[in-house]
Amino acid sequence: MTEVIIKLNTSNPQIGARLVSIYNHWKRYTPELRALQKQQLEKILATKNLSNDIFEIVQAALK
Image 1: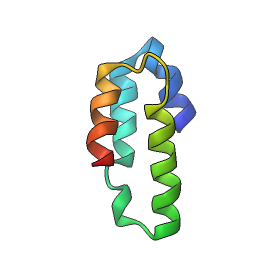
Image 2 (image 1 turned 135 degrees about the horizontal axis):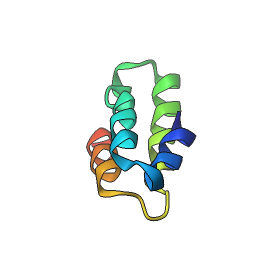
Image 3 (image 1 turned 120 degrees about the horizontal axis):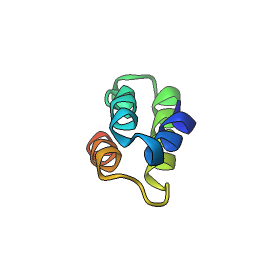
């Protein structure tokens, strides 16, 4: 899913922002799954030229 979100960043960031919301509740999972989901959020955040739509949702999810 992360790769799809990163690809949508350039073509359709609004849809990418909606999809990234699947990671909003990553803190509710087991430590192993939390680590994986946090890693994916950080990978998205490291994307060059990340749209504001996606950036805001990822930032909020990581808080």
